[in-house]
Length: 165
Image: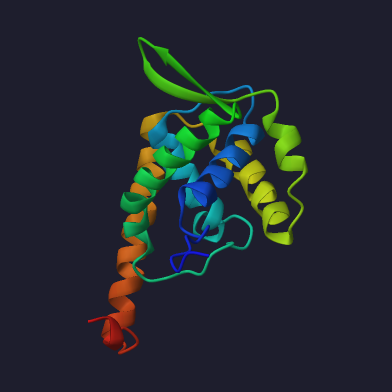
């Protein structure tokens, strides 16, 4: 047995499962990488956008997560493609991703409470934000960033953020 054990948390596998829930929820619609990154964030931090309770804790610097998520989601998409769960469509408009036929059945076999809540949040995200174009969604995300920055600054000013400085 090897001493080094890779964790499934904060990995391509975890990001891939989250991305797959979004693609299944919005099927047959396709999404580009930018929207998938935004949706991933909104899925786990849904309360930030006046949605259902968030799956992950509301950390003060969570807006920086978007930068880290992009690479993990790209890796997750490659993993999903290698297992025929996601298809990449290349067109003159760019690259978009679509859930394959087996994706829903695959997710149906994942029954943990976290995955059930994840699928509920993905349904909420796609039903709420699929109607927005890229500029509208980007504007919403920018508005949330400003709110998070203000929240973090308020915490620092009240002394709650002292451990973070």
